[in-house]
Length: 502
Image 1 (tube, rainbow, N blue to C red):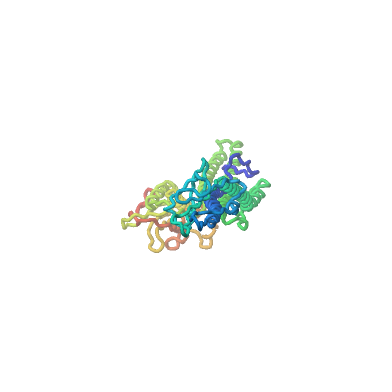
Image 2: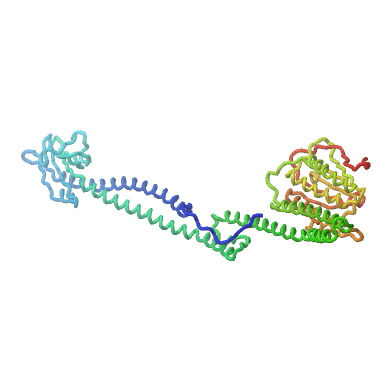
């Protein structure tokens, strides 16, 4: 039996995955991707905003010049009076260069002569048109408007161009501020998430302190963990831990009961062994007292051997909870019953007891849900009890059948002294032995029917005790869970001592 040591928790090894870091990563990675997307969209929005703002000023300057166009009364020449405000509105901290010209009939009336001219005929009148161009090796933004003047057949073109350094500087400043804001947003979100996760995990820390407090004095209290302080997200985990604690408590209780039962029951045969070994030392093996002592030693060893076998069987039956698995094994009840009955024939012969076997005769298979080893061990204990406590010349009958109302059943019936109805509820208790007035004390340990009850719980079966035929003896009925298929019958078989056959 392995020892369970509960003490101080082990040190956390390095590089253990952190739930907080994992949550932080899972949140910050999509948040960073979102920030990148916002940055891309924000850069396009900033570019459009800066362009529209500067284009509006450029259009205002072009319109101011176009509004000052005039035609001379005498010669019909186009003249322009450049207003100072037309270029003042374009002044900025970036000190962009401003270029302009006014062209008519392919010639420049005023302004920069080499400023590129667009196709005037393709442009609509009185509408400001923007275009990007290059002037003296520098990128410029050009606003142009075509005006048709009264008395002048050809349209007049007004152009104002501005270098784009100021626009680019403003875009860079806005993008820098946008980047700083996104970095602050992601960083602040990370710190908030880090703290929020820490506060969210605080109930788990309290739960850890509860567990540590239970093992502070070297023992572990296996009562369920409190669920009131557990977050809903980890509630299934704590419920599973509580289930594990319950099963562990049950297993430890089984081990403790096994230890207590074994220590209690082993004292008697060991005391007998010590007493008779002392007699052997005193009288030797040649005297009548020595030979009687040897007989008693042999009987005590046999009882001790049987007791150990029964204790181990009881421990195996108790090692798991009585919950039946969802998909149990399928066992041929007929075959298992025949094999176990055949194994018990030598013991029955020694007790002068006849063993009979009865099965259905309709030719169908009788299959039950359960492990074949457990079914065989259950039947073996019933047969052992029926043979051991029967009278010389008695009969033990093993029956397997399919009952329409309850399903597959297994019966062991004897014609021995039986068990009084008032005592039938107590015979399943461990080490309970029925004392009968006027009869010698039994050599059993009182574990046979306790093992039967434990095995039946493991199999999901029920056990019932009744009087035998004509009110004599005892009939034990075990109702098992049916599996798919019907009964496969065999004729009645009689396993009898010599000279007692039918």
